[in-house]
Length: 45
Image 1: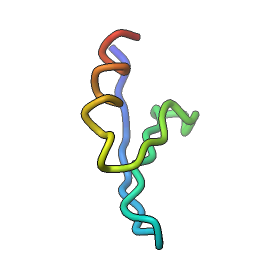
Image 2: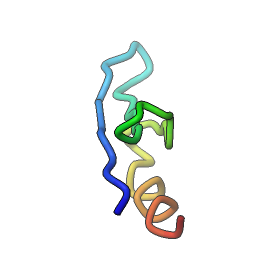
Image 3: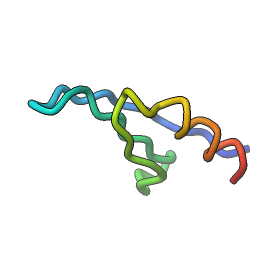
């Protein structure tokens, strides 16, 4: 099972979510206001 690590970064444009796997490979980057869309897309893959 793929385990994901998440980090929320404060930016001048708003919070940014960065998602990576245990090998620190980037899996997703999305603005917090679109985080629901990101979750849906990660569930598909």
